[in-house]
Amino acid sequence: MEKHIIGENGIGYTLGADGLYYPDLELPEGTHYEIGRYGRMRWEYLKNHRRGEYIRLLMNGKLNEYLHEVDEECYERMELLVEQMKVGAGITEELKASDQMKWGGLINNVRSSAEEIVMRELIYV
Image 1 (cartoon, rainbow, N blue to C red):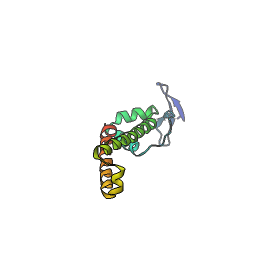
Image 2: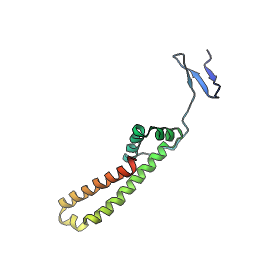
Image 3: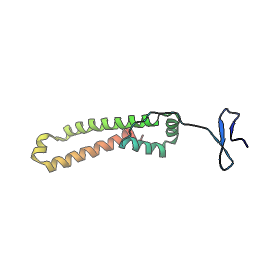
Image 4: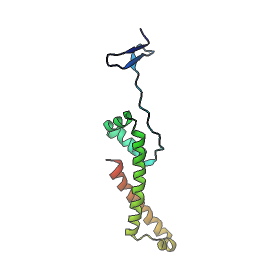
């Protein structure tokens, strides 16, 4: 048996140790970005619930770039939402100086609410 063959479809095949031929396929070179928390959450969601989109991005070499963009967009949206919600909730530097416990509770509540919105709008869609 030959070690390398070319199939009728033009794809090369290599003989494996088990006697079967495996296609010589390689993923295209993609970009490499550091992926943060929200990018990893989106990756997990795509892998488990949007399999077709995940495979398309992976095969096109665009998965890493896409996850990086989602991650950045999530952080920007979080920052914007937190600032808007702080104004609405009356969270100020004066409050922080006068009652740190109240300020801490309110700011944690605002951050949690903003994160829920971001996850619903950008991660789990």
